[in-house]
Image (cartoon, rainbow, N blue to C red; front, side):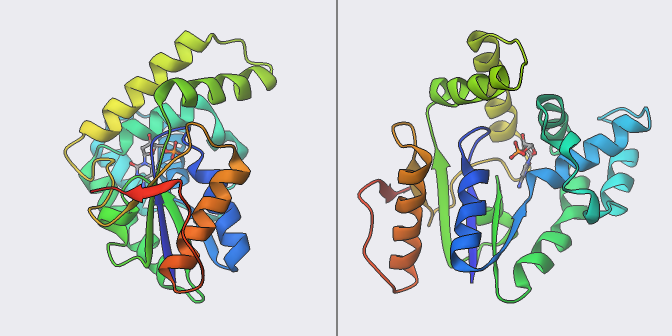
Length: 219
Ligand code: DC
């Protein structure tokens, strides 16, 4: 079983994907961590994020054992990841790892931007998690302020909007729902309600239970 969870930055897709994987006993891959790790490896060697050759090399030799590195979670890593993610050769260098991960029994939940469209177009279930930019900025700034980082809501909102633009307007594998994805709008849903809606949807798609009213077809 392969479950694709795509969506924009700070939509809650990561938390959701992790819980879904645990619930269904599947492996979980946060694919954003791959791009974040490539960016980290470039920056730590004093290289530029738009150095295509260096970025592709970093992607090819990426050590997947370093994906849990807490340094990957920060805002700067996310911004930097979004820049290297625009390089087509970086994306193709990371493709096989993601597909191999998805193919490993008993199956996997992958979260990212292009899982349903490019990485696993044959996924059993595709969910595109959305939330309005203001709500995502609100969640992100609460998280940052709780971690002791002083940043205004307006500044976070600006960053969220900029990242959405870069991720959804890039030429290769832009962030968008697959034609056969279901949208899960979490603007007015807490994490528990979002999780329940996703579980209901997966259960329904895989023939197990009823659907949730929070989910509608993307197209
Ligand atoms: O999901 P995230 O915030 O960790 O992702 C960081 C960046 O990596 C995101 O802005 C775009 C890129 N990314 C991507 O292009 N494709 C993916 N499947 C996952 C992330």
